[in-house]
Length: 84
Figure 1: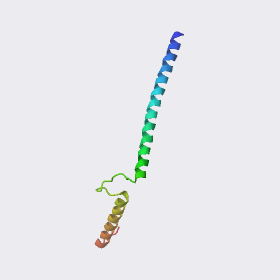
Figure 2: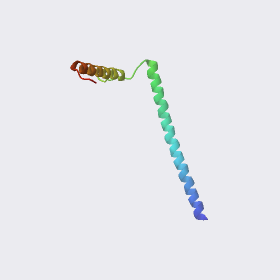
Figure 3: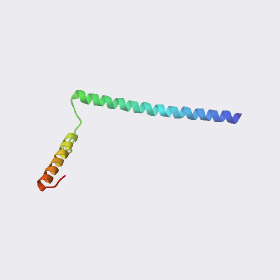
Figure 4: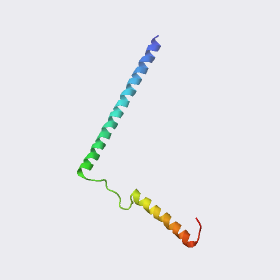
């Protein structure tokens, strides 16, 4: 009977330690998330937008460029007499 009690106590202690560790990690992650959200709110309130690399075009620009390239390819094919 003593072995069963010992195993139960060991399992309870292990579960309590694991639960405590999970709670600490969760609270730290929640604190980081709240701080990040607060930082973004302050950036928006100050009117600062994150800096964007001028060499990298916006997604909309890339889509437009791809569309223009496709149209150009079709026009070149028509001019060459190729049937698409």
